[in-house]
Image (cartoon, rainbow, N blue to C red; front, side, top):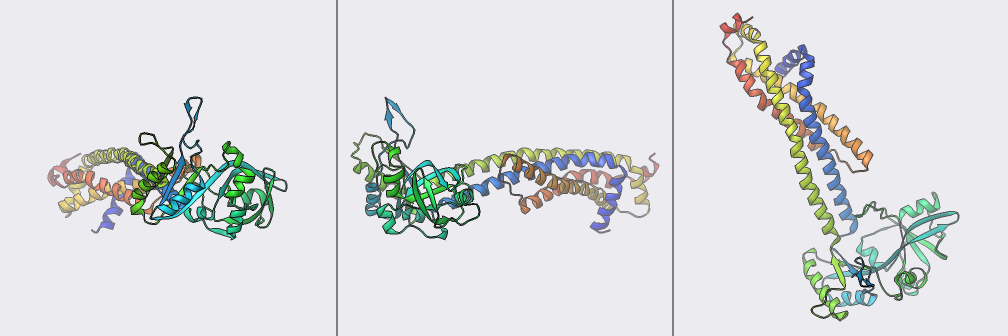
Length: 411
C-alpha cells in the first residue's frame, strides 16, 4: 500500500475511538497553537521595529543639549540651551563625511483652522531636516530659501493634521493659526506612520526655523531665542559614523569651551541603535517563549506514543489476522506509524488555525503588530509531523514484532 492508502486506513482506525483521538491530539493542537501565536507576535514586533528604523532615515546622528541645573538639581537630559545654529554650521563646515546638519526647535502647540482645533507638535526646521529624515512632500512644495531666511508664515503639515482640520480637503493654500499667528499651508508630508516612541509621526507641523524662533516658539526656551532642541546629522557613509561621532564631540567641546575634566554639555546618539537593541531583545524573548511553547509539543508527542501503545495492545488480534492473510511486519509498522502521523498532522493543522486566530485577537485587543508568517505555519505543521513520526516509531515497532500465532490466540 502507498502512503495515501495507509493514511486513509489510519483515519478510519482513529475514528473508531473519536473521543480518545481528539483528547490525544489536543496536546499537539495546544503546542502548535502556542508556537504559531508566539512566532506571529514576535515576527510582527520585529517587522514593526524594522519599519520604524526605515522611517527614521538612514545614517542619522541625534545631538541633544545636556541637562540644565536648577536650584542645585540636575534636570532631565535635553533641558539645557547649549546647541545653536552656529554649532550646526560648524559641524557641516568642519566635519568630513557629514551630508546635512538639520537644526530643530519644537514644542506642543494648538493649531486651528475655521472651527477645528487640534493639539500637535510644532517644529521649526530648515530644508535640511526633510532631507535628513528622507521625508517626501506628497502634495504641494517645500520651503524656499527666502522663506527660511525671512521667517515667512508658511507651514508644511503631516497627513494627520489635514485629516483633523480640513475634513477631506487638501488644505493647500488655506490658513491655519498656530497660537495667534496665521500660517499658510504650502505642503503635505507623505505618511510615515508610528514612530519609535509609539506616537504618530504624521501629527506634526513644520514651519521655518526663523519663524519658530521669532514668532511662535522662541519664548519657550527661556531667555535664549537661538537655543535648539536638537541637531540631526546625516552621515554619507554608515561605516564612518563612529569616527564622525568622535569628531563632532571634539568640535562641540571646543566650541563650548569645556575643560578636559568637564562633562559634555550635549549627547550624541544613533536613534536606530535603540530600536535595533529593542529588536534584539524581542528576538531573544521570542526564542525563549517559543522554546517554552515547544515543550507542549513534546508533551503532546509523549501522549501520542502512550495512546498508540495502548492501541497496539488493544488490537493484537487484528494484527494477527492481518499477518495471517499476508501482511508483512513492515506493513503493520507502517500502518501504526501512519496513525501517529495522521493524529499529529491533523492536530497541527487545527493548531495553526487556533494559533493564528489567537495571535490576531491578542494583536487586536492590545494594539500589537502581528504577522502570521506562512513559513512559520508550515514549519509548525512540519514539527508536528516530525513529533508524530518520532513518537510513533516505537509503537509501530512493537506492533510489527507481534507474533502472529500469539496474536490470533489473544482475546
